[in-house]
Length: 159
Image 1 (cartoon, helix red, strand yellow):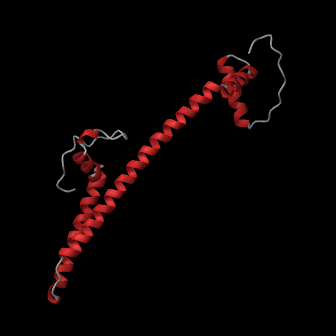
Image 2 (cartoon, helix red, strand yellow):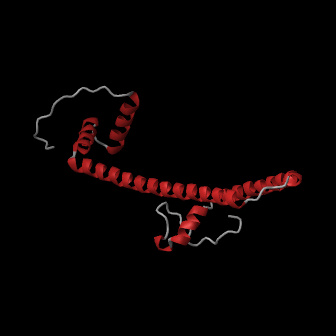
Image 3 (tube, helix red, strand yellow):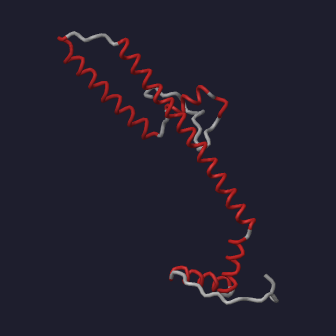
């Protein structure tokens, strides 16, 4: 806006916190509150700024979409793995004789407790079997877009 352009009076109602902030910024910048509001309106109404905001939102949406697709892929791998494991276990498991069922339950309970302990340790370390598996299958992908690379991780015997 030029100095010779006519100016119009505008009465606004703003929350107390905004008014305090407006006074504080105007004072620290050494400009009037009117000049600060004019600059804010110019920035807000600028088509270039709107395009920059839209581009930033689009970029963020693209990133979220990629993350969602990766989560969906990982979930599909997980579900297929569990389903295949269950089908395999049910097809190869032999019936336990009546006299051995208590011992078999005890062994199963001990194995399950060991499994849960391994899972807890693995999660506490931040490990990801799926990420490790993906890296083994697709080594050319390199680090994931979340900034975590599992390419250098050693395969773990407790995974």
